Image (cartoon, rainbow, N blue to C red; front, side, top):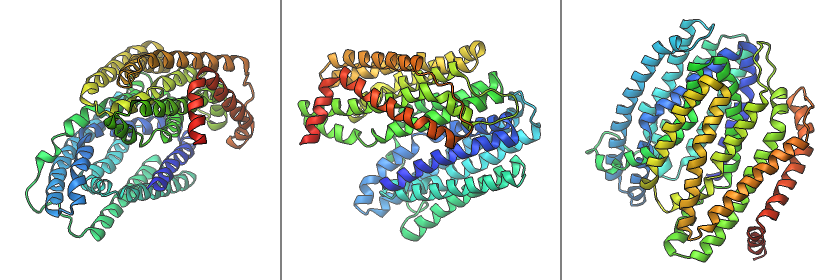
Length: 489
């Protein structure tokens, strides 16, 4: 399961890196910006189904263990019903947006092309929610999520290969999008085929619906919706208030920092359950030691990524994007602000893990919604006056207070209130240290391709990583000693 999930993430990152430069060089920044804005909008519309999958998955655990097919089918019948309802809402949103989108964005792209791109992309998403989502929920609950990951990985690889071939064959964007949607639908059909072949007892129509089993879907929705809004709204705000070319620029930086977040996420995935077990047992000393080790390692990873990004990101963009449409992708100020936004969001993760391990979802979802609402409002104002820099600055200003609150709340649960001040001081020192390195390490070379950039950047990556870890050892020597003791044992 871990291998399949990791392979899926690697495929997402690699394929995500391959396509944008090709779209930009062959179709221009505006078209790349449009495609990204439409994809973000479709993911944004997915809010209508948010929480339903999680609630259904939790409800299915016990009947699957008990092999109680009557109850499994009753829960799945309810899941199908609610997904169908959500899918109809999604369909209405797609149809309305296909009419509004061509008028919303200022671009030189023909209105018919914009309409078709929105509609074609929406068809795949609608198929996901109405036809196959219920099957994927069952596979996840049955501990068969590696099947979902494997089929998704194969679909991503096939879609990328087809897209590259069609681009070099000189096909239009419409044809490429039709092909991508077709591959997506085939991927969905493979999921259905696997479930039906391996679970003949499964039925979405037999018996009564167990709607009560999904009563927790609104709690799950409320807790998760904030992250979706913060992640997906910038592309839509930038496209509406600036231009599709700006969306293209933002999408490149967003993709890069999403990859960095994925790297950091590898070191935090699945830790809520072990910490939850320690919390239940009230093993305070064990909890504090384990948390300090985890927080130290995670902080080192975050600041290695942050420091390397601060120093090397502009040179990477020069090597990665080769466009002839006059759009400037190398924006040092925006790059720096995005780095700060990245670190302000990611640094809360260890403390958020403790909050989630304790199960304090209801106590935190209102604060999450306040953060999301504040981000949307502030980003609209800041983008009007500051363009792309405004969206990054809005992310920093709204995420910092929420991060501090997570830190304080988690430290209260750990019964170590002084940890909050220690952690915040450490973050401040790390940021100042990274800025100092950026100031002294002049990075003026411009590699012409990614291969040349890798050779050029490797010494920097190794040196900066070593220096960052050494700096964190000096700042937090006690946590390092705990890790060393744990390693020796």
